[in-house]
Image (cartoon, rainbow, N blue to C red; front, top):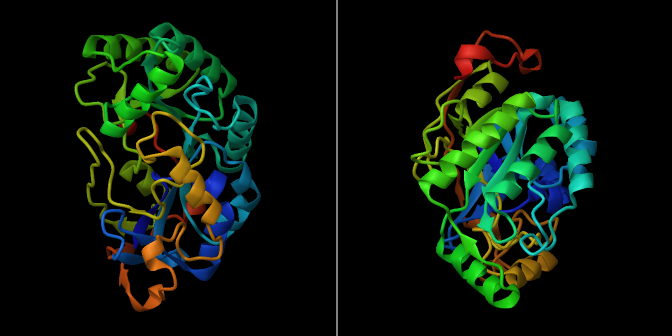
Length: 335
């Protein structure tokens, strides 16, 4: 049994939802090792093999019509929902704030606010997004989604090589200036955002922020063992820690997405090397393929003959409540 991530690498709910539902009907999908495209893994999507699904999106609109179907088939899931509404210089094609917010609220009405994680990240410091800008924008968004999410995640933009290159190019094109901030700047802004979040009934979590020591801001886990165990109280399932960087609290999951396939054009994105490559891959996407994107080296290859099976951890059914009787933890057990 495994946790499925759909996906850190691309926005499956917004851009590849038809593909995902086709693969769910087939009972499996494939994913390619991004560092060795000769390694193709099969991932079972059968309800009895999936402990939980973690969705990542900026627009849940396409998935709303299938929420009841997912739950009727017995899938446990929650949604990491990015909503930061940066200026278009930073997010050329990202969903517009009003419809994205509307879809978030509709999603919350269907699955409950405990399963909608609002992501205000990454936090970018620039000549158009200062600390004061973030205080205003976070307050605006938090007020608009009050009651639709129970928690918010923040992180500060990391100086990955490709992120630096994107910012340098944007600086040459538009004159925008960027900086990554220092611990004092991060700490002060986190305190300000915590005050806003608390006033709007939100718990504030940090995502992989080593050294951010602000009382009241909890270290979060995007692939969250605590939330998954709440979703699946019927399972005795050991979730192996699988941090992606320092201070990451995530557990192991099979990510079924592909790099360079999101067309939202976020300048800070670590999953895209170039917007042009992402557009090409999106255009060549086949919703009937078992891969969300098939590398040229695998064209005309029968993946069933060369696949590796994704290892699954054993699970034991507990004599406990059915997941439909889920009660989310509150108070001290969540601290």
